[in-house]
Image (tube, rainbow, N blue to C red; front, side, top):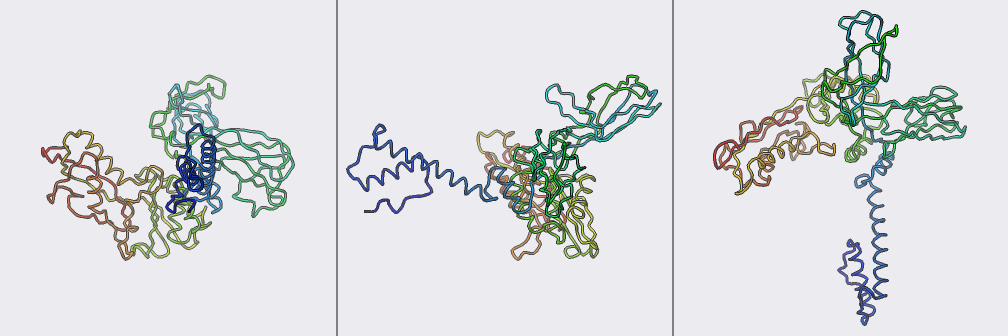
Length: 503
């Protein structure tokens, strides 16, 4: 007699399933054992084995899942697996803003606002704080007494450590979240420079690396005396913490300046501050979903930018960039030889700022160098606006306002640049990336795809079946996209199929 039936589902590994399988095993070996009451000693043993089995299989499944970058769910494991591919997850970036300092009257002497002067929003609880990045001076007699400076949503930290004189020292920084690239290290033997690794470091090179864990806490690592010098004396580490999208405050939100100020003669100065334009550039740390996409892609580019895809992949390594398309004369005959145009879309959509375009250009030409004879131009994306019009018939008893809002949200999600996890939205793309069955560019927004999204909304009974009842840009047809065009949602017009009026 078989000890277990051949139809056992070995993917069922919870407590109840294991207990049932053990009971069946016992019955197959000891047919006379029928006492499976809770208080039975034999049943207690079975449940004990089932409990241990459930725990062990959980750990086995968890280890298998966390050992692969496509299935890992813990940030520390994704960081470790991505590092094997030479890819590092980026942390949050700090928002910046231009603020205006204004005195109550023209000063009798220069009034200077030092680096790290703190300005903030007006909230009493959890205000958004910024610090001044460089000194700002309102000169003597200035009228109007106004000056502008740049502030950053960050805080400077200063920590001291004693060198042990041993190889591979690893002081761990206390404050979080650490801002990438902000560490400045000075020891008894000089000022140290941050590098990616010690592979090219000699015994006298004052180098250090930074490792950031899943809690955004940084550890500074020094060399062993053969690859990278060992620090001596007292180690001073200056670094910044903060960042994130919360720093993207609206215009005129930064209105409080902390501290008291005087002019060069010691006379008190009355100061007000404001930000005429909104703060920008604050982004969250890189999501796990984004890392799963970009880490394998990084194997194609390594440390250079050569192919068309290299430009796109390296541009998207910046967390501020949601989508990128590189076109050369091979894809667009109007582009000159030995040059290319890199179109970038920022996170959240819209047009990239000049600062972001400059950052992308630096990323694909300096950080990841391109060939010297190739010229790249970073430009705004070319958007193709898609207007949607639909005559909608509702199910009886549904709330019209709720259905309308749901349709608008569903269509907006369909045309969103990115998904909620930060990865590219697969339903929309540049025209060049949309291929036909033979792999040739065939960019279009499919009329049927958008129709299906609307029809699937809860409360929608049907869409009118006449030709003009569902339109994209005024037509019951697909919308063609040129290679460089990216579709964005325009107006959404919804009519009530039963009344003929607006939904």
